[in-house]
Length: 174
Ligand code: ACO
Image 1 (cartoon, rainbow, N blue to C red):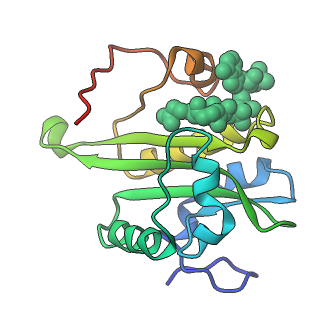
Image 2 (tube, rainbow, N blue to C red):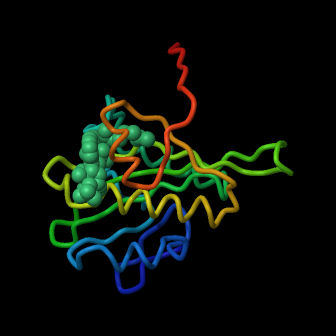
Image 3 (tube, rainbow, N blue to C red):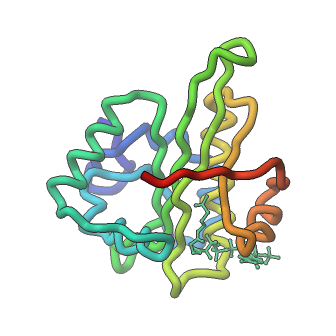
């Protein structure tokens, strides 16, 4: 299993080497960016995600089972977290999902999903760092584009992250 050097071995979703060294350097020393770990339920992963949408917490065992289901599909799910070292609590989360296509010479597309920064930490460039780290993973996975859906209110944020507005989103909820 992959682990963070210098920390008690963490059971990670994907190898930590895929995290951009540039983004790691830009973070203040009290914060760490890394792949999601199997123990991150206890570090408040769902509590940070609840800043974004309804979570419906089914308990730690169900969360861990989802973690393992994601890891069983290799080179597809890349969930990352920013952790406050002092409190050992998660303060930012995000994910990129790699879709393999038949188009574009069997090309791949990175889908950025579920970006959230704890309210107390917003406005400190953590969202920007998360997007840059996820885009780095997408581009290093060979994706020809990285896309996402967002509200009108978040368009300026994604523009600051280097994204441009393109086409429309459609949705049909079950
Ligand atoms: N409107 C205008 N500008 C914004 C906004 C906004 N809503 N949000 C951030 N910015 C700007 C910042 O001012 C900053 O600009 P600067 O470089 O000129 O100083 C730049 O964007 C980077 O901002 P960050 O400090 O990195 O933003 P933050 O860490 O607060 O993260 C985020 C932004 C993720 C949207 C956060 O506010 C959040 O968690 N919101 C609630 C959940 C949410 O909406 N998540 C995104 C859903 S879309 C998806 O998941 C694909």
